[in-house]
Image 1 (cartoon, rainbow, N blue to C red):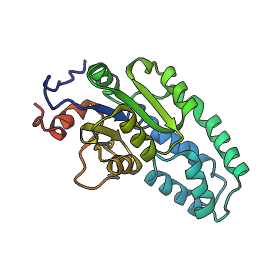
Image 2 (spheres, rainbow, N blue to C red; image 1 turned 90 degrees about the vertical axis):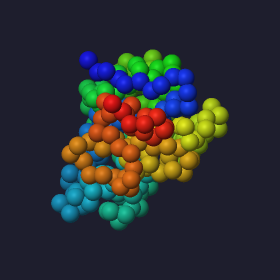
Image 3 (cartoon, rainbow, N blue to C red; image 1 turned 30 degrees about the vertical axis):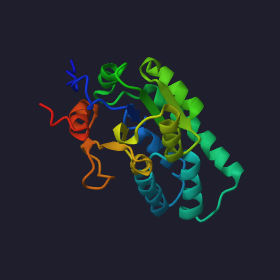
Image 4 (cartoon, rainbow, N blue to C red; image 1 turned 45 degrees about the horizontal axis):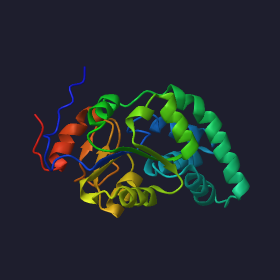
Length: 233
């Protein structure tokens, strides 16, 4: 059983809020979504397929419309119509829906949510469309643990900024936990703290001095260091 080391209470070490990305942070679904994107271009030459995958690995955390616009316009050189983007998004949604329902939680995710529930607001912030995100949260019985579930639109920079204003959260004690550079950018743009989730077999997408964990079992130790409570035991 996961022993979640606690932060001292009361005191300044408690975060004002924890803001989690979904895919690759709470749900082990980032890779399967990249695979679903890439599968839509399996009919393309190898060099194109490799370019698509390389782009997807670099640009996690963006709305799918933005990804398809880049792939179609910049990689394939055929600026897409709105109808083309809508068709691609619909195909992607069909391909990925069943896979998402069967995805597992990231190690330590449930224990972390249970530990922090009631101690500070827990927010899920994702580039997934709102309706799909709500369905995913319900499918995995996570509704109870989150104070707010925020999907797209808007983009993450805007959504995080809106959250800080709406809940009157001090940015320096609000912690964004994400697995993509877009998550890091959202945190930095809004002045919040950030902890990256980087799987053991993955490349580092963040600056070298970024606080990281390989899964959420390690999160509380990083929170202690980040919020000035010293290192974990």
